[in-house]
Length: 306
Image 1: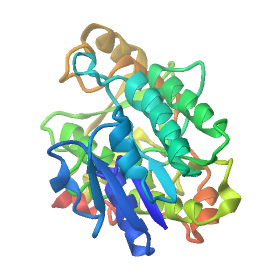
Image 2: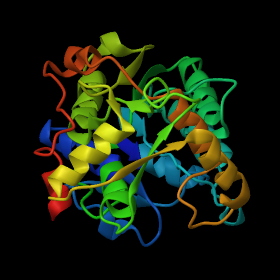
Image 3: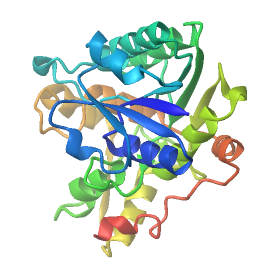
Image 4: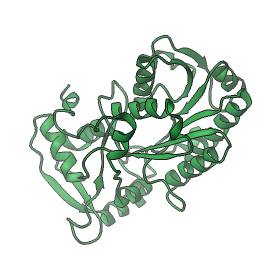
């Protein structure tokens, strides 16, 4: 089938495009002006230049397509440039769903995120509202919610690479967050999921009508603490790292003072979501793809050494 993709040039999007092409699907990609050179893993894709607010670009993108994948999200807002959670993660989905309806494209896959909810942070609420809008649109929608995604970034932004650059490869100790007063009981826990497993889950969901109307939380096979992840990243790059525990309350105080600065590493909302944890049942991915998901191991993180 021909699949339209919004958000096919980023980290996860490039893998989704690659997996779709390998499965024999034809691709139609929406790209921003000047971003055509980032379509390096979508062979033979038809490129449509424009943005999500352009009805003409969306109509061109969806012309002749059988399905739409919306895979756009941000971790940090830049209101001065119009980059907000509301615009990118909710309004963009509304525009895309309405364009699909007008083009007669019923099948939609929506990339969301594990842990979205209402009430929640602005990130969580806009993702949750987008899910609800899509699922109640009357179209054939599947929602996929990955935990934190890792894998070779291929020149893009990626979780493990950022941790490696910001903490493991710096000359100062790494920080491990915890909430409350107990380091062990308050540890941040996640289920890192490999980007290729996420991409394969998208292909499997697209090809299986039984997934319509359903929401899938995608996680790796282990629930790892922040310390676990730093240790494995350090091993992957051949380093021994001193890790200092820091209470979330202290980090939140710093964020309250400084998260308005672009270079400050985390925002208050991000700390809130870290504190809540981000785990998922690995059986979900295996049920979709027929294969157990990859582990967050030094071997799978070998790309960091490059």
